[in-house]
Image (cartoon, rainbow, N blue to C red):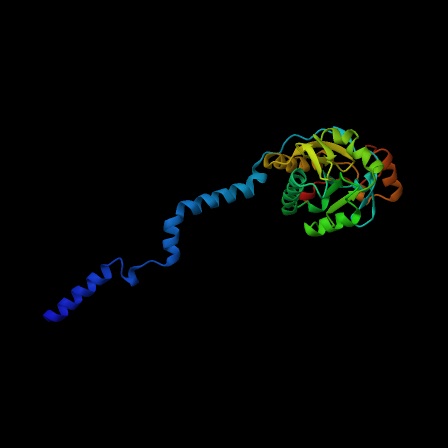
Length: 272
């Protein structure tokens, strides 16, 4: 090998050993991963915990019946009649708010949307209904509620927004079910509607029994999610009200705990 060829070969070898040479530079995504590996790992861990937390919580005990939905007659955002009999056959989560209330009512809506997002990801979305009862009937007309539902993309097949006059709302806002909500609703001098206290959501079983009140924080929503399944298990063997006839449904409206025979057995929806 000539001296010039040896010098060129040596120069080429040093060039390939140069980490700054373009051909030795790793791809940009590798450099990005090297610089931010800890941030990416922390983000993936946080995402995994957030997504799976509802499924990692051990199922709680069956929530006892602490009350009964009283008779009421309201009007929905679609101007349809809605009463306690329309709740039979589904588990319902009930929230009270005003569309012009800002802080506390926004917490209620945000919590209900987050809760139903978990239900929707499960195998029982068709068995759970979401009910928002207006605490501000002077402002929340059916038209206002319809616009509110549209603005927040609330599916009318799942979400029922109901209002009525003060007399029609009194059984819900001032009767026994409201005692566990921990809030009172007031309208100030300029017409701003707000609630005092910590807002809670109400869980109602398929027979109109109130199964508890739950705050709007993440841990309480996780408990509410698990208690929804517990409610199904507790009602195994009871009649499927959504499959009964009008006469039998009317009988249940008068006595939600009565047993109708013959009655198809309720099996856990997630076992079908």
